[in-house]
Length: 90
Image (tube, rainbow, N blue to C red; front, side, top):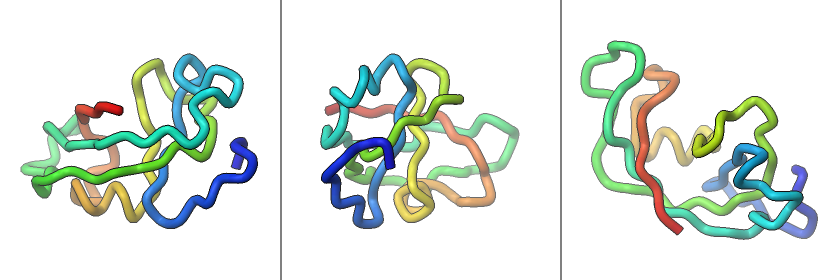
């Protein structure tokens, strides 16, 4: 992980460079909710939200995107959906 001294656990995320800000985002916690699909998968969201901690940089992520751990993603959405639209707040 790009963040030093972070205990990742299972509910974590990597963030885009614009959010990561040279490790300034390390340790930030976000509440993430699935709000819809992106690739036509029917009803990808499972309802509810998940709390994640930023532990890594996602160099290929676009600004505002989060790359969730598999465990965090599967809490809010069907893993087979691949990508979903989300809302999140700190």
